[in-house]
Image (cartoon, rainbow, N blue to C red; front, side, top):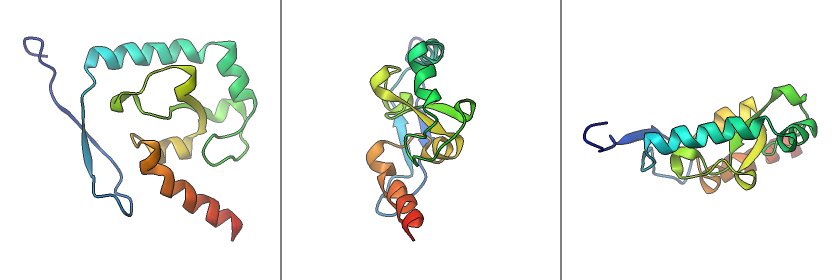
Length: 121
């Protein structure tokens, strides 16, 4: 950081059909990122989060997993302005969390639809 000016951070978003955006520029400062990550670590230690994971279901693909196999995912990613609050975090399997990366729900909706279609076929 130079003289209080945050450097621009670019994040790659997986190119998905119907979307022309390859990159986005985060307007979240390093200080805000650090604060939200600490809030997420604190939230992960709560009984509320442990109960969510004990349900054993990925929020996105709805498959069953052992509680230790689920990760915390921010529905609206922190780098896109999301907060580490109960209404914005969900248990997700590692595969879904890695696929989603920094995508917003609307950007990732098509991927989820494809997953559900594969299960039906």
